[in-house]
Image (cartoon, rainbow, N blue to C red; front, side, top):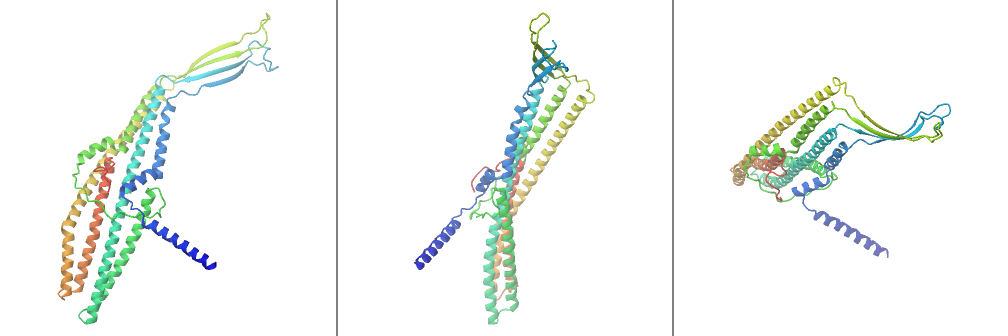
Length: 433
């Protein structure tokens, strides 16, 4: 019985381990579009901005509503010697209601200003969403580069191990030098150190990307094996600037701020006009008149208004304040527009340069480096090339491969920055990668 239980326990443990391993093995690669979708659905900062926009959208209707009416319960002309409600004819218990009525147009202006603020909050949310997607793309492409870089490091480690074996064999047969062996071992150790550095960078990028995706930083991320080609579309900077001027959420938010400031000027000018309070009351009287008849109840109607007589220190100053706020909003919008144009120019320039660099590496440097390494290796095998030059050629090819993939990632990151600067969801359209 003990042996049976022990076997069952081991079998269950083994099945659990196999299930866990299968779960790990079938983990789906995280494509860029999937990462973008997760960020939009799960990022806490974006949800906070969305909640703020929802909250601000509830403000205009409140701002355009009348103040709550006031209900009053009063005891008028109550004699203090007896506190009797029937002793004096003027004594009455009064029930009243009053309503404040702002000067016509004020409530509409308040609602309009609140609407502009609410729309600005919605634009700020859209801006945050766009910047979130930009950052997700930047981190994702960093991971794509690091993934390729680690593969290159592993391949070059294997090549250097082969060179170590070749140099050791030559040294043992007396046709090679001990310094060749030591040099190969040294370069192999450097590649091992480079691998550790790249793994550390990859872990940091994964943690940052997971934070943007709204999940635990330790969540594993598997990168796709196949990456898209670089688009060769022309960059129309003028068209991108025109699009950004009309559609960039940050600029729309600044324009809404200008609109709100203009409305507040009109509202401040309305403050020269009085506000009104309309009220009605009903007084209940007790006791009888001298002729023996019961005292009749009394009704009152009241109308009051504010007197804006301190215009020099209040209304005039308020108008000046609102005009200065509008000027500030207009300058901020203009400054924002120039900054957006500068972002577009910088991103477009970087994109053009990185495209040219990538083309140079793929069409010239990389093929030349591979040919040089192959030639050096063939010469070394027949003792026509020394070992140092062979290692240098191999390391040059390694560094060029690494730099090529780094530039490749930078091309896509520049595209992400340019799309975000122009206020576009995608620079060339939303195609799966």
